[in-house]
Image (cartoon, rainbow over all chains, first blue to last red; front, top):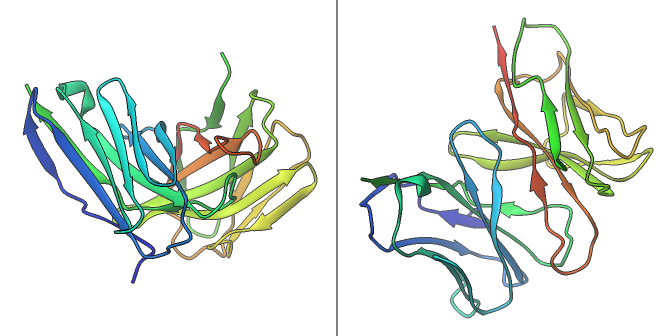
Length: 112
Length: 114
């Protein structure tokens, strides 16, 4: 079993839709959770960084962590064509860990 | 502008040849990393370095080598011993170990073995 599981998609939605991206994990020690956005042929850029359970909102993006279910989500409201990218979840057991555990990424396309 | 610069963006290598990928950062970050990204496999850690003149193997170090002679620079050499080198290589850095200090990536280098 992989440490982190992420549905690879692809996921296609119409512009303006609410998008839900998810990851599950097996290691209950994970406490730090990240979402990265990666455009085609580019490096990943950090979108959201959260600690432990709960929600964190930043503009149209909301990150949600449910440690009891070992499940994290990224919600995108009012999705735009510019949100079309691959979204990677990542996590670690401690702050500043040298090795993050990554999901394989979900490819999202927002159709105008 | 501050950031992580990787070069070259695209590189072709003949089988049996070593190749070196450059990574430079002007963020004054202490730690630097090399990841490899393959379709359907996510990112895998090759090597990392927390301070100058010190580096550690990651999960897939075989067939790779690194050096850290300067804080700003962390080049990766893909040697002929790496059996499947065609991949997208990502350099990253991190400023510290405290909460909130996570990893930031460069734009990546595409290596193709021909």
